[in-house]
Picture (tube, rainbow, N blue to C red):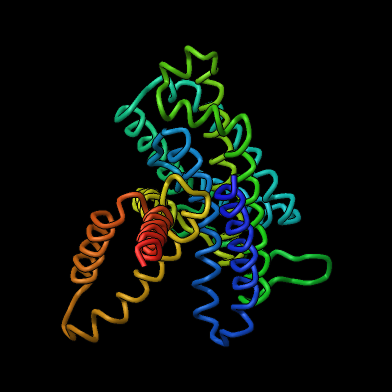
Length: 337
């Protein structure tokens, strides 16, 4: 009981310290580049939190989440730039529309399992990306939307710079974490974990497997759509390239590196991969002056392999296990002394 209370206090303290850190960072960083990187980390974290609910708790893989990310971005971009609708209304329409698409497509997709499911979601992402490229009249095709996308605004305050947008993005990210945490610790979360553990056992206990798979898939798609809308109104220009297969794979890598079994894992996974990617762009050319992009890919891949070997459960679980091991050894040392 004491151990449970201590863990709860530690979790509350961690959330408090993390929130303070997040909201204090812009006051310390007087660099727009760093702020823009942190904004992208926040946006991508929202996508990966939803993906973590689907993969880490329900045990269902998705290789097409960049498609839902793009649906949110394009819906917001098209509605606001063409019909001059409020960006907040466009974001809501995008989330609802993406949720409907995910729910409808999820009905046949989740009759598949394992690698067949992975291939189906991969195909879904590719189809959505092809639509972005080919529907020139609607999406602008490979060149993207030529009509300007407006910034988000709250009241009369236009969020037109990195400093203002940073706080909005991270408020929504923290809200996404809270909602996901409530889902995980609810009856739905217990059902999802039972499905992940054994679909046969879950079905024998009366869990409606199809219903819960569809629900979490739809929720994860809505998360991705909201992130896409935030991206569109931050960049104020969109083209198909950020919503392709490689982005979907990158989201999965971020989820795995952060830790699929933790709601906070996605935030640290996204931050770790994004910072690593940006750092390699600077460090590798300095170490190897004539190096091309392939050197960055090799170093990037090597670091990922090392992380997976020594922290197979992800950064959060791996560091937590290291901390618990240190506490255990420290306790034994104190008893022996």
